[in-house]
Each structure stands twice: as structure tokens, then as C-alpha cells.
Image (cartoon, rainbow, N blue to C red; front, side, top):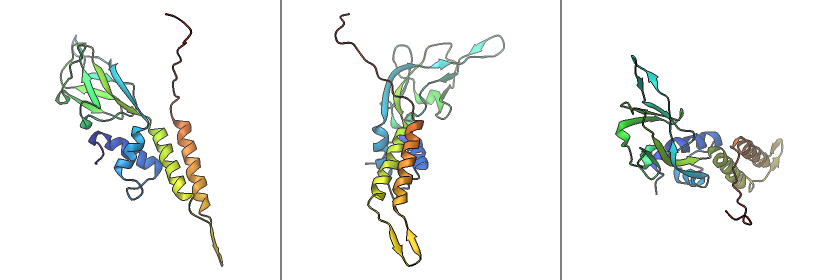
Length: 185
């Protein structure tokens, strides 16, 4: 099974941050880690930033708050821009800059509300998990001492775990919603 096309940029980020080559973990493995750190969102309002054009305002620039999202190439199950009725807007009508969290519409949207349904990923926690996977592999290695050589392979485990902790600290805070079960509404 090949990784979803819309995941390429996220897989590249995790690979880079975790120093994980394709010989260690293929794209499917990295995608699997990312999927464990996924949050689906539905009908997220897009923020319009109008700009003036000769006594008129144009609505072509829209922004979304999620930082790391699955791309349009994965299809409408993973990425869908919608109008206020919920109808999908074809990807041919806009371009996306994932790094800037920006959607640029080809035509003026006339101040109409636009929404995004998709999947966001916690790449920091995913990267931390890959570092822990690498640490688990390194845990099986042993130190070697011969003549004038002293190879401390156990240092790899320590370094990998420190990297995992570092990326875990960089991850956004998790939000927990608590509901009272004793209250009647």
C-alpha cells in the first residue's frame, strides 16, 4: 500500500526532523505514525482577508488555523473547501500554500463564507514517536571495547530519547474537554 499523495509534505517534514531515511522507515511507516497523531476537523470557518481594488474589495485570500494538514491530493475525504451550504468547491478554483495556511481563490468570492473540512497532524508528536522507534532499535546494540577502540553504541539510545523528549516538548498542548455527569441540562 502506497502512502496517500496528500501526505508527501508531512512525511518529508517528519523524515527530516527525525533524520529517518527510507532504508529505516518507508513512507507507509511514517504515514502510519502520522495517522496516530491525526485530528479530523469539519466545517472550519476560513478567515477572509479582503484587499482593496479601485473602490472595491476583493475576497480571494482565505486562511485556516491548522498548521500541518493533509493536502488536496488525498481527495475530498481528507481536504474539502466548502461554501455555506456544505457544497464542495472544486480544487481547480483555488491554490493552496500549506506552509502559509493560505488558500487563494482564482475568482473573487464576494465576501461569501468559506469552510474547510480536513485532517490536521501533530508532526511534533509524530516525530517524537519516530525518535522513540529509533531508540528501540538502538537499545539492542551493545558497547564494544577492543584494543584502543571504545565504541559506546548505547549513546545512540540516549541521544534518540533526548530528541524524542525535545520534539514532545515542542508539540502543541492537548485540549481535554470534561463533561459533568451529575449535572442535568
